[in-house]
Amino acid sequence: MAEDYVIEMLHITKEFPGIKANDDVTLQLRRGEIHALLGENGAGKSTLMSVLFGLYTPEKGVIKKDGREVKVSDPNEANRLGIGMVHQHFKLVECFSVLDNIILGVEETKHGILQYEEARKKVMALSEKYRLKVDPDALVENITVGMQQRVEILKMLYRDNEVLIFDEPTAVLTPQEIDELMEIMRNFRKEGKSILFITHKMAEILAVADRCTILRKGRGIGTVDVAGQTPESLSRLMVGRDVKLKVEKKPSVPGETVLEVRDMVVPSRSHNNNAVKGVSFNVRRGEIVCIAGIDGNGQTELVYGLAGLEKITRGTVRLCGTDMTNLPVRARSKLGMSHIPEDRHKHGLVLDYSLEQNLVLQRYWQPDFQRSGVIRKDAVRTYAERLIGAYDIRSGQGPVTVVRSMSGGNQQKAIIAREIDKQPELLIAVQPTRGLDVGAIASVHQELVAQRDAGKAVLLVSLELEEVMNLPDRILVMYEGEIVGEFDPAKTNVQELGIYMAGAGAKIAGSPRLDKFVDKVLDKREKRKEAGRK
Image (tube, rainbow, N blue to C red; front, side, top):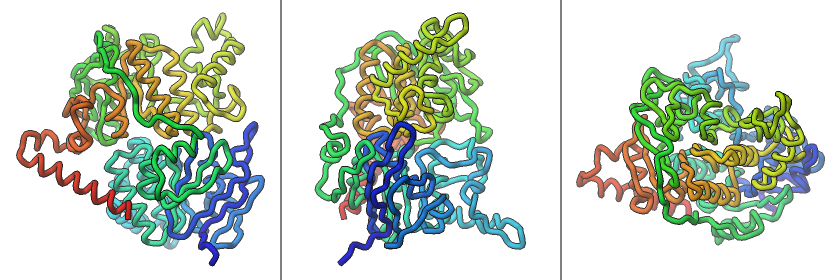
């Protein structure tokens, strides 16, 4: 009996200048399965899915839907075929509302009048059903990255697609939201929908995927059944070698204070209340301090205030004893601050500049790179080539590659290389491993620990509980604009952090109800794991 494939991508080849992104790749998606796509940054995963969604036209190969050859000429054709996609880099119009973005391209009209109320009811029903909790009237430019991800998911759900492509959908979600998304995906499978799921997180593949196809440097390595696999075996298939999945570090030896924040208040862009409410903390030399919390609780505005991207309305910020509360961004950089931003496209890169230009964005005015106001191109080229080699930044044309054409993971590597190579006194790293594969994540973690061990101060902002538990020396939990708890990673656990992240810590700490609440959380997680195994 022939396999029941809803999608077949046979011998797909897609080339860009200087690189063969997909080289004779075959992928077959069974009806009603969750199929993971695994590979290093730049392996060709997003390119392959973009071919299926009609964003790229392959040079060679055939796509079949329900056994019939089809031409997916553009995303509208993909939607007509019942194929939807949640993109890694959001396809949203920032000056439009959430509702406008969701219905864009599939607006329903009656006598030429847009049926807004009907669309709103459908969006809110989907939002309620899948617990996505979006504000339909909020402008996209004013909402967090995590909320933008939810809008992308709702766009696909709104179109009633039967083949669902998720390109790194959990990269900006909290652990609780990831659990819920995994449950949503299982429900989609029960409804007979078929899912293609790109992720670098082995735990997610093991939790929900039925099969996994591995890509390495543009070529298909093979497809395996997920049952019986381990994080180590999947990592080995992906990178072709063993990868250390645990952060190795010596106990920290903190020194003098590098960053001192006192009574910091930062306004919100999306409402009249303050996003950061009188926050005080410090970061010392030789330690990694992590700000943990559910997305949207003031972490973004806190970092904007520290980095000079948002005005602080009250309080002081000192770096190495110097008041930088009102200093511009370049002055903070010269003072010794580096910033790996949350949104790499908006605040990290100039997408239409070359890779080498982006690598010197923070240093081009220094004598090493200019003479009498003229950029020394040979010096820039030599510097870029060194960073490309040291940080394994993969691009089709090396230093002259336009950054927009690079994979998200390699764009992230470029930012990390630039910011760390400045040898800052303070490194602010916001979601530094977002979109990176396990090999690159291990390298970034080692580099952050190396910065700490070299006597630098590192402020980490992360939504990844595994990263939060393993990398920092101190954890500060932020809830509704305030720091509600400080923890030693060696003396806490995921459940306790989760309680404080949800705002329940201050209310029930020291109460007899605490043990009962923790038991309830643990029981719920075990039931989800059991459902995933079934």
